Length: 360
Image 1 (cartoon, rainbow, N blue to C red):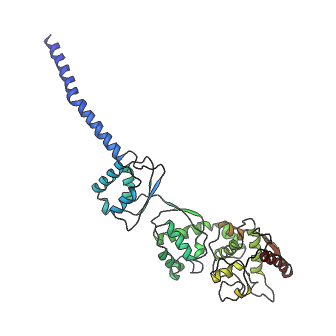
Image 2: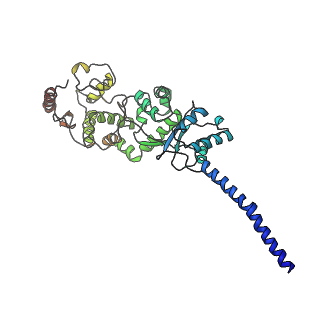
Image 3: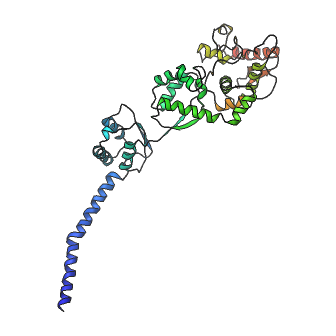
């Protein structure tokens, strides 16, 4: 009987202990865990879509805070600052493009930024005409200074390192889209472009160029002229065939090949890309890009050509045409001719159409 009483008393005391200490302790722990979850693991961003924060070499802890504050919830911002103090982030700021996704917690975002775990940029190489324009467009997408990039691209020693010169370095830039880190250095960026160029010039493309007795740079240079002549991809192999015939033509009058007489090269020589008509007075400019005066291809591309333009050269249409002129219907396509007399008839029709529209 005494044993049962003692046992009963023990159970009562145990229940009192749980009620008095254990339950409040568990409740306290749950509250602490809830607070921790709320500040460090619940959604940091108040935005519905993915936002990107760009941290560059000039940023300090205050500017980092300024960049993330418009995205952050109040509790997320407080937690980020607490983590920054705890891990001395102000002395360990890394550059980069960091994604802040809806639902991601502060701790994860802080770890990414602290460790430099950034999200790459989808960079499309633009089909531009000049190296300064290329540098400017690249600098809009990457943490690269346009002036410094242009300086590299016009440095003969740098170009030679990659197997080019200042006239042909644009050939290294194939206008595809690449995933690349925003804070990439200029040297690593150029290394990547060389790697992608070599990948582009696979066995099939290289063999096709050899069969046409053209180097990769010559293919790209010719493609750049074709891209300036038309935006009609279906017609590009036809135009490629015409220019190729001129390149390979040999007779007593043209022992070094028939001049291409490509109007876009005149625009490039003058750096007047908005010209609508090429008059005779423009044809006398002293420039290696003047294909009315100089036989063969110009020293390098007059723009970064499209992949369609490059493949048009490698898959040219085989025909006997030596001349072409824009069609008088302004369709963007061309009339082709095998003789100069036929060509002049086509040119007269186009000139009449220009005059009727008042195009100077």
